[in-house]
Length: 268
Image 1: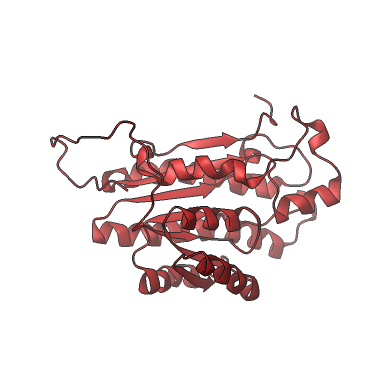
Image 2 (image 1 turned 180 degrees about the horizontal axis):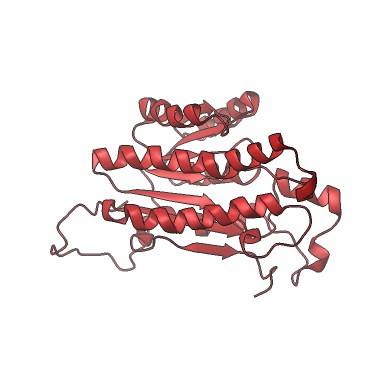
């Protein structure tokens, strides 16, 4: 990752093309890695040379994943983490830093669905969805940024929103959609606040990609793909290039952007 601490007047020479996915020396913290997209993100970042911290609530799955990553030569830290516990979220950054070094890449992937009509939700469910999907990522982003600012180091943050932030289908996900709209706005606002510190904050808003959450939705409401132009739910591998672009030196001037990655599924 390019260190942009040089004076603005300095001449910088860039390679041609100015693109690399070599993440050697970077420390990536990915939340929600016990299944689906988060697990794929951790695998991809590790494959590109980053030290990777994986996190989630299910300890057994974390340890199994860590063993696989280490067998491939990756340096890994394991953090059992409940995103609804704000103090634990803050403390997790210090745990990662102690084991791998300062976090320079953060992927806020952890999230849960609501899967109920809005007027039927319990207060407990409302709190869990908001805390996991929005409050937790906000607290974690602020803690990572605080440490980067103190160290005067650049960083990259990628937040997982959803195409639902803009296109709500009405299938019982009102609160989920609301939190994902919050993630999109959080991305835009924090990008402005932290741009002076060379911390880039961007988001990916996926459509239907295979994950534990998505596959559970298909079980509940039926085959979504039949209604899509390409008649498919996407493989998480199709998100690799977007993730790597946003965490690599190639996106140095890109911040505050929400990339909609929906395979043409949603209305325009």
